[in-house]
Length: 206
Image (cartoon, rainbow, N blue to C red; front, side, top):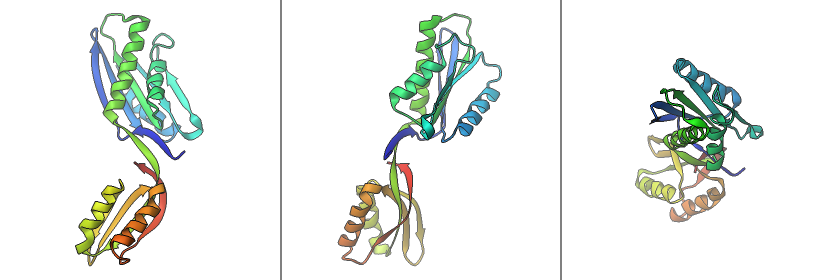
């Protein structure tokens, strides 16, 4: 898999539906242990909630899990999962917490409410695309630093660290399929004075 979508950060949002309070929590996760730990943390935080339904999807072994947590079958966990799948997001866990407000919503109302809870949670976490990237370094003179950062921006590279000493050392990641072209461009515009080296490969924000 060269690219996939997930959420950038842990986040939450809420809304009120007929006096029931729905809170959507989301977190990027990479394993079942991480997902379960997140679910348990929300259950502990909202121990007094009427329901803590959840769903998570992982790239690892294409795992998909959900729970209605006491709501009528198929009205909570399944809608949460369905929104995740339709958004094309993976390595993500969503917990939908509900405090019952005294008015029954009916099966259709529950599906809509839990779907919306999942949707606002994903939006709060900000869906991003992760791509296979080359982790790189380049060391340049101060006079070339601005030119280098402009070039990295042009290629959509993500700068992770900058060390200002005798020279400027810039650590960054760039999409794997662009790394060779970026290297050629750097060498070309510096008339062969500067090069970059690839130190690792990883998935990073595209």
